[in-house]
Length: 585
Image (cartoon, rainbow, N blue to C red; front, side, top):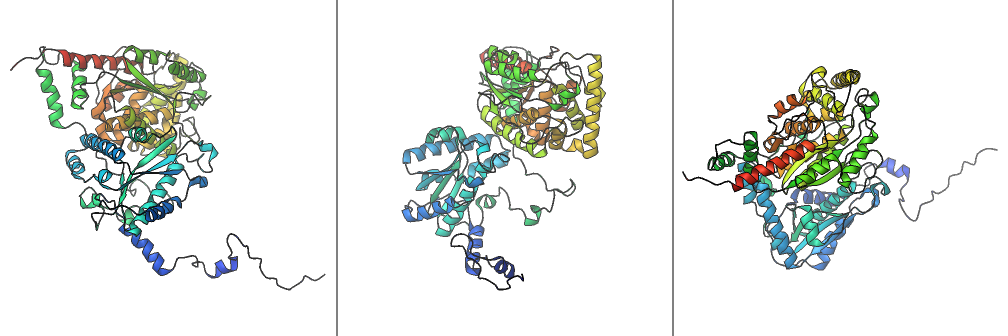
């Protein structure tokens, strides 16, 4: 039969999108807002400012509801809506929060270069007290990432969602004529404790909201000479990240080493003791470093152990089964591993990080694991570059946390990680695999030959993919390192931001510290080499770090044992410095 050629009216849904494909094709721009509305949006975006001075006048309830409603309309991963808006009016809570910001401003200023520190201290940060309202945007992370659409691959997407809510709130506030200032000069744990937040709920800082007592024509930090907005062309890339010659520069860092008066002052203090100057040798220099960093009163600290399996173990480069990594991790959690026992013996707390150990989850650990594929070094990279960056950043946050009190000692757990360390040493320093590949823990001559072959093959593959490998520490780490080394590099960097003394253990940990120094040279001023191990390449790495070790016991223990023992020695040296009689000049 011939097909019925009649046309029928299109069924128009009563809910959802009522437009037809023909309508959208005829006018692709038809979804745009009217010109006046578009102009208003762009005006709000351009005129948004971080306001720091406020009038005491109250914010009407209906205005507050509108701006919070705008925040609540933000996009969220998997439509999870993880934000919670905690509105603070209580003057006592605001006063206590202001004390936390004042304290943190002084701490952060101490870690900046002199000019940046002065500018930070000059900034007006009284909004926590002045603004009639404080709004703390909390992210409820108690739902497992795997249970939220989109978070299994990007676990931090819930935090990004909350940041989008803040931006919505900020733009709505600007449109209403309200001022908003975003204050992040808090230690997250302190702010969470002040507000009584449960475990799994984290904050994104404190928003000061009220009628502004300033109407800044330009961003405050730009007016204060802190920085300038980059031209748009400098931040727009096309298709893929460009080659090194055309890549945009990394954001500038303001971390600084102890200044000259602090360094000289520590030495002058030692010269006033009733003993021969330099009588403790290398230990005296380590004590001077701790005092210059403002940690002369330290009486304890934390041993951080990061553990990970390594696929390269499948190439027969270790006499131990990879399952031993998990056994040592569990023993460390129980406090009975060699490293944990060493930490307890010298009075250190311990923090165990699971950076990728089979058989998890492991209760009681800090889990900072790579999400992407892991490679065996020989045929495929150790990690994705995305995972490498995320692990360094996560380690950096952990480093800032543990660096607030005492000394930070770093150790690792991982079968086959001396092979990984040798490959990374070649990648970072251009070393010959034969010169930096050692026996590890118990290898024989045949296994040593295999290790050298594996390291040579891995380094050759990585250099073919990245001819300038030695100039890019993150790429070298992704190609030839391991997730625990990425985490430890971040911890060293983060602890240095807190001006903590960082005591590094053997070959592998020293390479993690070297990555941190290559990323931020000022980290070196915070490092103390705990020991020189038996590994062939360790002396070369220490040379590049510019660190002379406190101990040279031909150790092969790993697990942070050398770092723990050296930290105990450093704490004893600080106690000697504090308790020794002084002389009059």
